[in-house]
Length: 110
Image (cartoon, rainbow, N blue to C red; front, side, top):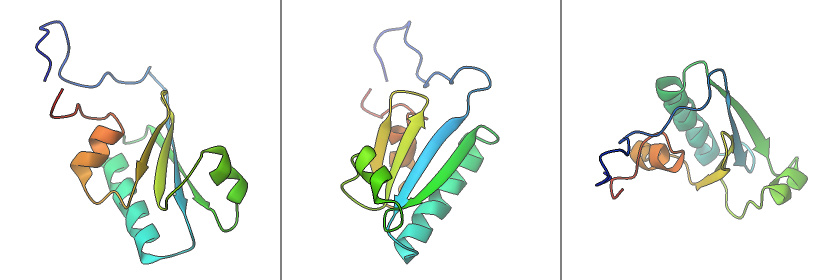
């Protein structure tokens, strides 16, 4: 954690009432895509209950959105809000890594 006593050891909450906008990019209905969605849903329910919206984008059906968000691997999660935009690649099976990547938990090296 931080050596600065004025720095909080937690990630600040988004402004009151703000909804986390998350896009999960997948390529078809594969087991890895289903696992990524299930892991994301579990993380959101536990840490963002009532404060999130998940949009699943199948790049086979909507390749333009994937290009817009510069998706290079599947599955990829894009946190659109709160800013800054963040990307996480993989099926989100490591909850700790996902929480750090989404900035719901500080990195252990901070």
